[in-house]
Amino acid sequence: MNSAIVIPLVVASSCFVSAAAAAEQACGYSSAGWNAPSGAAVFSVGSGLIGDLLNAVGEIRTHSMLSHGPGKWVTHATMKQPTENSWPAVCSTPVTPSDLIEGYPGLSQVNQGGIYRFLYGSGGSGPASLTYQVGDGKKAASIGDAIWWEVAYYADHSIVDEGVEIDRPNIRGARVRYSLYQYRTTEGTPTGGPAWNNGMVCSSFLAYAHYVDGQGAIPPYTYGHEKLANAANALYAGVRDSCESSLGFWGSIGTSIACLTTDICGKAANQVANCMASHACDTSSGSLWRGVRDTPSTVAVSISPDRIGGWSGHVWGTQPGATVWSADIGHNVQWNSGGNVYGCWY
Image (cartoon, rainbow, N blue to C red; front, side, top):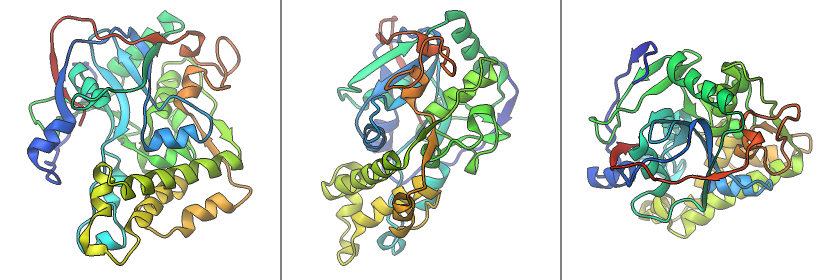
C-alpha cells in the first residue's frame, strides 16, 4: 500500500440488507486487471440517476476514475445506494437522510476486483462504454503518483468484508464524502478549498488531483439556468420513475404498505433533488428544489467527467483550461492481465 501517513479509522458494519445481498453488490472477483496506465483518467458511460442528470445537460460520460496502473489500484469517488428510512419517518422522509449527507463510501482506493464489481455488478453487461485517456504520459503519471504517495489516507476496510482493504485519502483534514451538491457548485474543491460536508464527486476529485500535482487549476463550467432546470427535472423524474417502476432500492420504497396514503415516490424524488439543489438532504418538500429551478438567475458551476476529458464542447488539447488528459482520444479499457483479483468497492 502507499507509504503516506496512515490515520486509523474505525468502520461500523452495515446491516440494512442481508449479508449475502450486500456481498453480491459490493464484493467479487475481476476476470483480470485493466490496461489503463498510471495516472490515466478512466471514463464510463452508464445509466442511472447521474446519467439522467448529465444527459439532460447534453453530456455523455457518467463516471471518472484515476488509475494507478495496469492491474493496480484505482482512486475514485462514488456512493452506494442509500437505505430506506425507518418507520414512521419513511412516510415523510423516505430516504435515510444520513445516507445522502454522508455519501458513503465517498473518495476511496480500491483494487481491480473492487472496481470491476463496481462497474459490472453481479454479472451484468456493465457500462455502455469504458475508456481511458492519458494525454501527456509523464504528467499523467505524476498526478497518479501524487495521489498515491503524497496524500495521507485513512486505513480502512470494506463494511461488507472486513478482510478487504479500502483506503480513503485524507483531504482537507477528513474523509471525503460523496456530495450531490457538487453538481450544483464545486465550491473550493478544484483547488483544495472548503466544500459543504467536505464533499466531492468523481470529476471534482480528478480536478483536485490535477491541481494538487501542480498541473493547473481546471476552471469549473457555468451551466446556464435552462440547463440547471433540465438537470433538476431529470434527477427528480429519474428517482420517481425508478420508484414507481419498482426498480431496485427505489422500488422497495414505492411498495411500502405502510405509506399507502402518501406520495412516497414523489417525496423520495424531492429529497434527492433537494440534496443536489441546496444540500438539504433531510427534507422531502418539493418547494426547495423547485424554487432553485424556477428562479431565473440560478445557475450551476461544476466540473463534469466530460469536462475532465475535453468532450461535449469542453476545452481539449492544449487550449487554455484544458486538462492533461484531454489532449488524448479515448482508448478502450481491456481486462487482460493474468489471474483473478478479489475485492470490494465499499
